[in-house]
Length: 64
Image 1: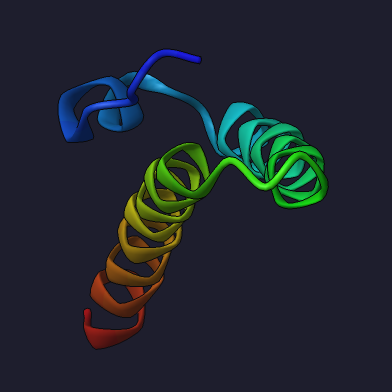
Image 2 (image 1 turned 180 degrees about the horizontal axis):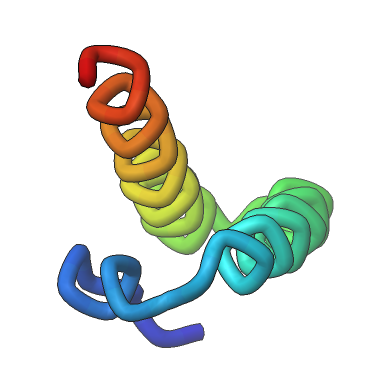
């Protein structure tokens, strides 16, 4: 699993971001079952980055 940086998230389309969130959530479930604590923490951070970007984009559109 590679980390996903904020600049990479910016380059993605909305559909790609939603797809990545689903993939990471599935991977998170697998990591929890395997009791891989460090991997779980990293996956949660990546999901949070994507969701933060999505929320900031929708907030910016609503303010205009």
